[in-house]
Length: 321
Image (cartoon, rainbow, N blue to C red; front, side, top):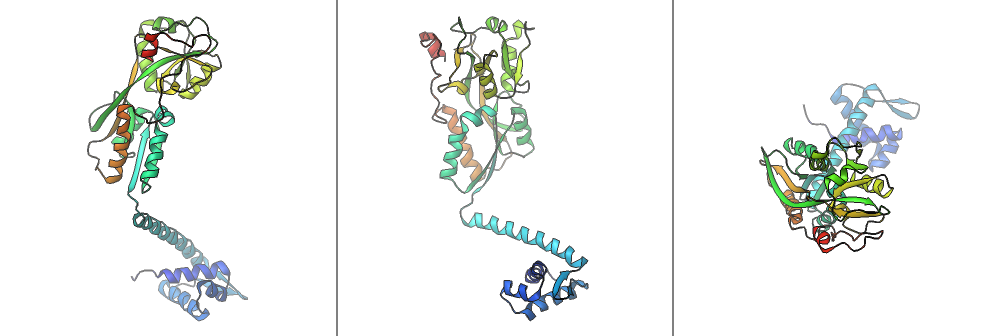
């Protein structure tokens, strides 16, 4: 069977849309007989009546309406194909889907993504916030190309590129008095504790750090994000333990203290071992590997000195922060 003629389908759409052959001809910059011929050719091809006249109006028959619906989908796909080819012509390099933890997405990724967009406009970036275990599953199933995760993760089938360690710190309401310069599990066990949701990597680390004090006198309150934890602490609902990067700037209404013994997460970049290293992925990977040195990936600075009578931490505490 010979291929469908797109000009004939376009003529059908315009006749039905405008309700007349003459109006369709004007839209298409054709003569009315030329439009009538295109409709007759379509009807001859399919062996059915596509257009019927009621007075001076042209209407689609039942088969005509079915073909109109199909033609609209065909032209949508044609538009998508043209847009895709335009991207290649205009310097499109490729598409990269990044999975990332919420903390990285909020505090460190935006400057990297901004730089990538400015320097490589031909790369189409998709970023999805997800817990580490979902990022691992996404990489293994090839639903995402590369991911920022918190170690440990299973090594089989993954290429794991450790980037750096990120210290965890304790945060308290600004008005709280008599907070030690360093925070121990014994001290935390006596406080109203706010923790990350149970599926998060930080929750697992903090629970392990507190394991000698389990069961805690008071069950922790669980919140979904670091920002929610900071807001709850600032509202005097309790204390929490969060990544240092989350309080690296000037955070009002919160006092920050280091932990003893220290506790940290390890940030890593992962991708599938068999993932083809295409140009767009190579560029994005190299940009994310810039996090390895802890450079200016988001304007990180030393944790702010605290308020409420604790503006000057001793030298040991400052170094550990």
